[in-house]
Amino acid sequence: MRWIRQRLLGVVAVLVLVYLFIPIAVVAVLSFNKPDGKYNISWNEFSIDAWTNLCGVPGVCASFMTSIRIGVISTIFATVLGTMIAFALVRYRFRGRSTTNLLIFLPMTTPEVVMGASLLALFLNLRFPLGETTIIIAHIMFTISFIVVTVKARLQGMDPRLEEAARDLYANPQATFRYVTFPLVAPGIAGAALLGFSLSFDDFIISFFNAGTVVTFPIYIWGAAQRGIPVQVNALATMVFLAAMVIVLTAQFVSYRKRKALQLPPKALEAALPRS
Figure 1 (cartoon, rainbow, N blue to C red):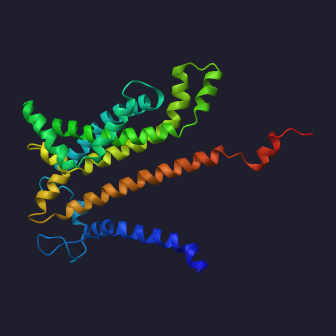
Figure 2: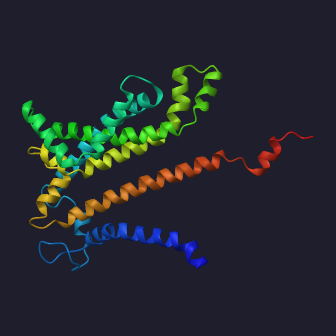
Figure 3: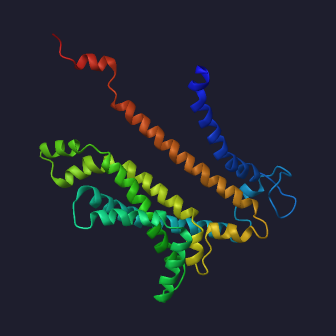
């Protein structure tokens, strides 16, 4: 029983990870499939045609690049605005601060179909033409809450004594923010930006309501599912997953190198100690 208790958490964690990655593995395997028919749901024959000809099916690459462009633009605006809101909520006391904190969580808890329908009604009442601009505005509105919460958590976990030490050493507010505050908050901002981009790239419901004639990658997959999703979709999805994995592993490696660099070796520590 002791052996089971000691390893139960690790076994459960492995099983959960396997459960999460099985669908991704299936998508990756089927990207090398040559289906017998229009539905790519069962293995037929190994082929790399989808990887060597990603844009072989009309509309795949166009919708993919549209989602990339919308995701990048909305992430930039949402990250800038969300970071400023997070700083205001953590560092300043003002009237309506508690209400603002509550309102920030509402887009996260509101069903996307409600938000998508309400934004569609707003754009129609304003007679604003539906298209890429309305998708970007909608994505900024629902991703900004996630960015605020992520950056806010980073700010609240920061030691204020570091900034106080910089001011004690006669650093002005601009230098303190540039050399102390921003480097400490930068990992949280980067994580929030990656989260915002993934939410924007992945969104279907809000984009479907406010897209007009624009076809994003999720909308293309939804339409193609009725007549058979091409293998190129599996290849592009695998590329996105591999790119995300590379970014995460690179960030972990850089963080590990920084931690190792901050650790003083034993010989250097002995040399730094005063001799009696």
